[in-house]
Image (cartoon, rainbow, N blue to C red; front, side):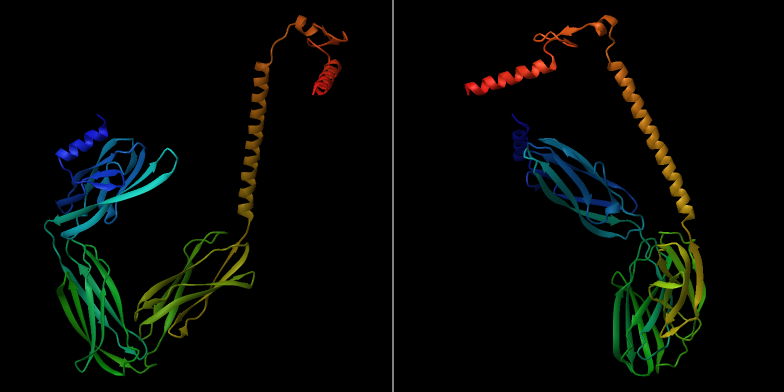
Amino acid sequence: MSKTFLLIFVFLIFPVSYAYAEAIAISPARLQFELYRGETAESTVTLFNPTENEVRFKIGADDHQDWFSFSESEGTLAPEESKKVKVRVNPPSDSANGEYTTLISLSFDEESSGQISLNLATAIKTKIILTGKQVVNLITKNIEAMDTEQSLPIVLKISLLNGGNVRTRPTAEVILKKNNRILERLIVELPEILPNSESDFYLNLSAGNLEVGDYLAVIRLRLNNRDISENQLTLRIHPLGTFTRVGILSNLSFERKPALGEITKLIAEFQNTGRINLRAKLISEIYLNNQLIGKVESEEKLVWIGEKAELTAYLKPGSEGAYRIISRILFEGEETELKELTFEITHLGISLQNTLIGIMIALSITGLGLAIFFRKEVNKMFRKPIKSKKQEEKVYYCIDCNRPIKHKGRCFLCNKTAKMRKEAQDRKYE
């Protein structure tokens, strides 16, 4: 009785839930883990190959990949072979309680006798039920809303502290009112906050079409569909040009000394000394031997009143010579004074290094050639037969012309003559 027939017989008597990828069977079709946060749970899946060809397989989780590990993430299955693979799940200790779902995907490559690869795949539905004592404690440290001008956005700064033992991802709702009438509304999901960490978030509320005057901003924070705080702030929109826009490029430097062909990080420190939040960008012109060869820019960054911020750009020197980097920072239609950095790049170090490398390569090639020559000569010496004086002095004679030769048979001329005669005779009979 074959293994395949025995397996079918067992399935008929003892039904088992299987998933299939063409002819590949995986059991069970579903997995469920129930565990406390920070603990590890384990289960086993069985793979079976009822085909006549060897199969290569890979197994892995689609979501929450860092939670899963497998006793064998890839391998092979011989014809009619079954294999058990242990699946372990270990959620981080700061994961929130709840139900998590994912798919454990299995892919197969089947090699048939015709060398045609068939890519097969299936998946096991997996549920993780996470329980245990958790502390959710999201604290609102500070919320600010600065006055602004017409055509500029209203910028809110929200500072939150996660004092619990699980990760949190709150939602912020901002409502802008005037005379109890809602003018603008913004709902955004904030990035995840790790336990015992504080994070600052900046939200932009459009104010391009709003009139000059006083407004009320209502900021509601929610977590897991529950309100955790509500704050109300007053702010004023002023006519365009009311506030002074002043900023200083206080420092300009490289992260490390520039080198030929290497990416170098240029760091500029910008300080907002004005009376309004500023959006700033670093602009740097690159000169080589007093000729402009290019320009690099940083990403635009929001800098609050009185704050300092680092703006970074990247450059890659591609030629030798004397470089000058002339930089300024643009902010809200204004710009800072220029700052300059200089450096020089030569080929001396690289040329010396290349020369040394060339010498080493030449010596290596020479040594390798000598070694190969010596080995060939030694092999020839051992393969060459040792002849006695009698063998070296022995003389043979041609069987046709009796001329002395070094081997038995005919000499070269007689042998050629004999071949020509034979060919002529063969043509005659044709």
